[in-house]
Length: 84
Image 1 (tube, rainbow, N blue to C red):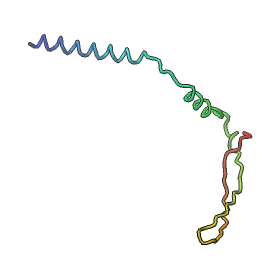
Image 2: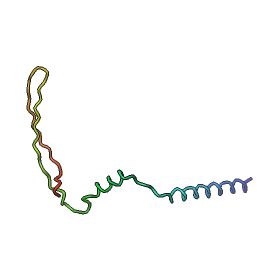
Image 3: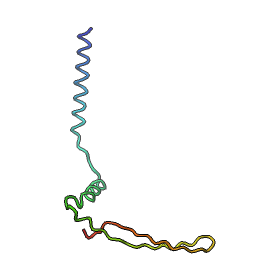
Image 4: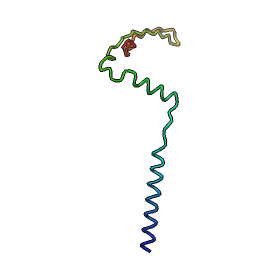
């Protein structure tokens, strides 16, 4: 009985190892969108602090509510410059 259990256990381990090896050999295909995202993320990779240059943009919005009251909101939007 022990011998049969040992043989079954060894066969199960071997089957699992074979299946894992088979799964690890499959190559992952990336879509064009995924490749474009990788390229965009790696665009400034390794340029040190070349992309620390920021541009500040002042935005103003005028809001009129239901009663005719107008309010002006000014805010500053800081974003990385495309020049880097």
